[in-house]
Amino acid sequence: MIALFAAIGWFYAVQYAPRPVSLRGCAECRGEPDDVCEVRAGAQLQPIDEYPRPAAGRIKLLRPSAETACAVPAQKIVGPRAAIELAAVRMAIAQPSATLLESLHLRPPIRGWPQRRHAETIAAAPDRSALRLALVCWPSDRGWPNRALGSANSCEWWLLAVDGSGAPDLSGASFQLAEQAFAAGSKWPAAFDKNAPIAESLFINATPPPAPAPVAAPSAPGRCGDGARERTATLDRFDQWDQQIRGDAQPSLDRASFTLRSPLWSGHCQEMEVLRAALERQLECALAVEGRCE
Image 1 (cartoon, rainbow, N blue to C red):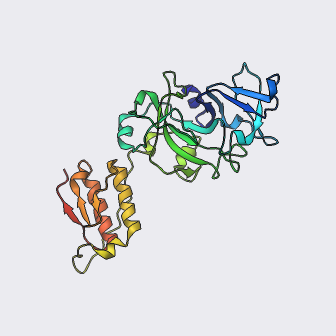
Image 2: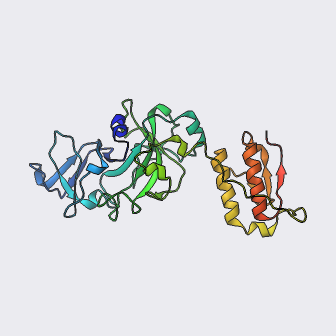
Image 3: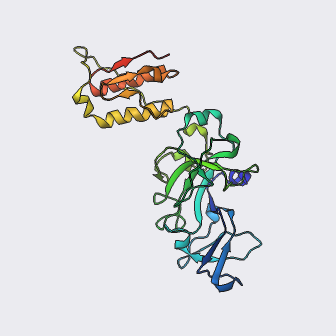
């Protein structure tokens, strides 16, 4: 299954259901009684470029080759009350490295693959051998599958559960990365480049932006106070880099006293000094530093 993802090196349309589903309103059922289309539990995949575009408000379901075709109203797949899940998925071929797992901040795991309505949160630790880094983009009536994958489709980063053969494991534990959903193509351009495979370098080996060039000051800056507290966007940006570099949601900067807890940066002392200097220049005041970074 993973070999199929890798062979195309691009997005697949993945239709999946954790349990059997009966869909009414079927056309082209070819013998199935009372216009009911039975969808087995499991996942069906097709290259996104070959996924059928909706016609007359209907979408043809992906089904095992031994079963007949079936087309159902598009809202049963694309709408907010969709009975089965459909996503455009681009997946890495190899299991995530230990370095990647250490660098990521993950949300609580869910059972199976992402669900738009009722994802069941479970207690589980990441198992590298049973996970793959993947970009998951959701369907939209203004975007894919009606037209090409684009800004109308919302995307998320996941570590998706796979079984021993690399097929989707709808009973395993999947982990969403603690990254905001984003419009397809608006961020991580390499992830939407057919010539560039999904790579861990999207999330590791990232370096902070270069600090502004130092400027001469007529006198030493005073301690940060109320004026600096009003610079919330600047402080938020520091906290974001703090979390990305250290992989810890606990901020190292105490905004009440403007004290930087440097022991929390152990192993990243150089990055701390660069970011601290940049922050002080932007705030035009000095931070207090508590403890020693080693």
